[in-house]
Image 1 (cartoon, rainbow, N blue to C red):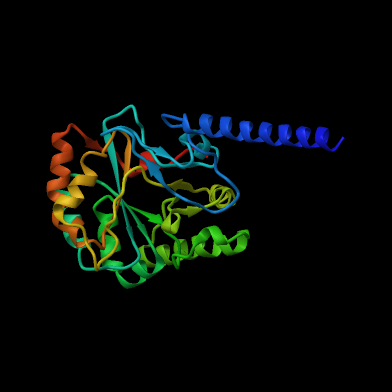
Image 2 (cartoon, one colour):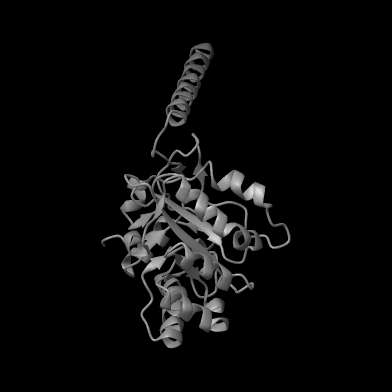
Length: 270
């Protein structure tokens, strides 16, 4: 009797192991835009690049994100790039970046934190005057995925809206980028309820550490082979390297046949 039970138990364990192995194999076979679904737990936005100049996979698919008015790509049927910058503070480079954008007739989205708007109002006003869009990067740049109640979420989002209107006299465009790319299903739902399109990115590189800036060569090694149709590019305007290479970078992308999409095209219909 003991032997029969033991065999049955072993058989059940082996069956479970087989199911798990099959699930892993199927999961490993995902390709194209397929990816894991958005979970209720904390997610760190991430990308997988499989081919040179190919469209990367996100750790949530474009189709899944769309349910929550979120995206990480522009229109992939067009050879276009959407340029975005994140900034929590002014590091002395934004004016030069704006000069370069003007030279190339590129309109970008600047995702700003409350500190930037309050300490650099003249630069913010210049962004608007030159046709750029300011997006919501929250009031204080917290880990938004740790916020589970709507009132606290609204405080971060609407706090920046109020400050922006007081500073510029204009309404903030409803484009939202989660600080550090940390998000959850509930966060995406909250942003959607507030009328926002959440915008992740499909190309970025390690440009944020002021004490360890990439070289020109390191930047181009990341930003040229990985550019793709419909790319939403994230750069930090605090980066010295970005400031120094931007003119050449935009020229190289243009030589590859790319044009630049407008910020308005990133806004999704609710």
